[in-house]
Amino acid sequence: MERIAPKTVGADLLDGVPRQRSVLPAPPPARPLAVPRVRPWLLLPTPARTPFTLGYAALLAATSVLAALAPPSLVYALYQGSSTDVTHLVRSPAVVLLTSALWIAGGLVSPYAVAFVLVLTALERRIGGARAACVFLAGHVLATLATEVPVGLAVLAGHLPVTSLHRLDYGISFGVAASTGALAGLLRPWLRWPLLAGTAALLLNDLLAYTDPMTNWGHLIALAIGVSAWPVIRRWAAAETP
Image (tube, rainbow, N blue to C red; front, side, top):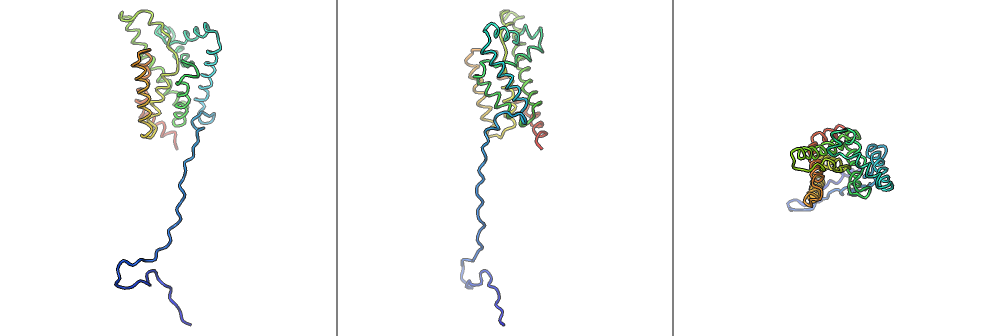
């Protein structure tokens, strides 16, 4: 019985003839492109992943509804009792620094209300609730002191009237600005720098309008506080992510 050897690849090619086409195996089938899943619900707080943001947002919603429905005289008294002006900071600093963060200037329709939910949700998902609360509180407290202490000194020096000691100062905007600056340090560069540039541009535009320079300077200071915390924030994020 005659045995036939298997035909090898290229055995049918002619010797001495250059550039002959060899027989190649068929390429493997191409994998379909992976389409990223869009999950917009991750932008909103949830009880399991972001309890601090969800609970704080519910509290702010309740105080905003109260401010919208209560008599104006009562609302003004609440605002005044929570104001972090120089007079209240001297009398009861801890109380007013906490209670002033229970209100949203402008209510639920304020841009800071939307920014609070989006920024704090993203920040808490990356570093945890307790650390996100520390970032928010640091921006709120430090920016408040950085703007109100110079007012008190200017009044003592005679450069500002005594009425400056009793100006209304409340809201969450300083904490939101600091949280935005901190969150930017955890994002990829293509998103980090547009977020920082856009936020700084909006705050500078408010400052140039010169409608409330003390508050506007406080926003920029709070943003800088968040940016200065990048080394700590990144260590927290690395510890939070397995």
